[in-house]
Amino acid sequence: MSQWGNIDRANNSVLWGTALVKKPVTTTERDRLYGNTTANAYISGQTIGQFGVSPSEASATAAVTHAGWVLRTVGSGGRAGRIQYETLVAGGSIVGDGSDDPVFPDAKITITAQPSNATANSSAKQSVTFNVTTSVAPTTATVGYQWFYTAQAGNTQTYTVVTGNTAFSGGNTKTLTANSTTLASNTLVYVVAFSEGAANVQSTAAKLTVTT
Image 1: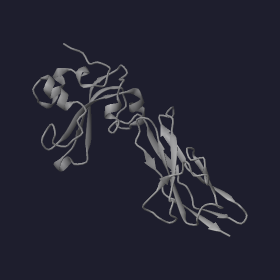
Image 2 (image 1 turned 180 degrees about the vertical axis):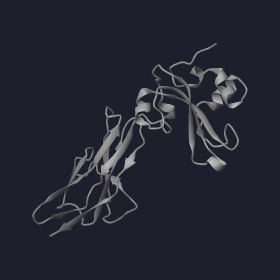
Image 3 (image 1 turned 90 degrees about the vertical axis):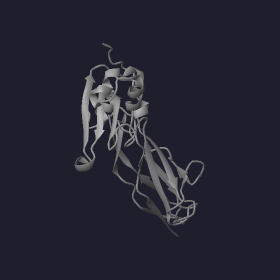
Image 4 (image 1 turned 135 degrees about the horizontal axis):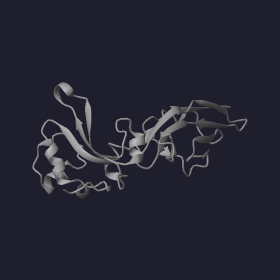
């Protein structure tokens, strides 16, 4: 009998995995089941897929506590909203797992402190800082940051990156510094935190008030 591989791709999933969901044991069915996240695409009325879970994904996802292959089924009808995980095999590390990051992220970022509004006096040439605090699981993951601002003060619809605007510094760090002498009052800023294999997390917007 063939064995599971440790690469997260369809041809490392055994053919008989499809028999667990009462489907024909063929390469076509195996490939359809692998990585599926679309409702009704494989079994009518269900969202069901088979995934390889790496150690980093397992540590970042509360629902899965092991490395290996799992069958993930999203409930429907009376079980709507309930997700069931069946362990198909546990053990060796899974690698090359980028395809299922939306379902089993390699890391999970949480914003624990949002940026706060700030006030600065332009006559005194004051600068202010906007800070964000994050946590990430696993703790070995690296978090990056990108700040955005409203070029038209008070505009809550259109933001642009702070990169290239000399009124700001620290645009790729946890702390953004803003110069009140060159920015309009009511300028809004927010930050996006990101990590490889993780969903981006956006902060709330903070407002710069400039006085004279």
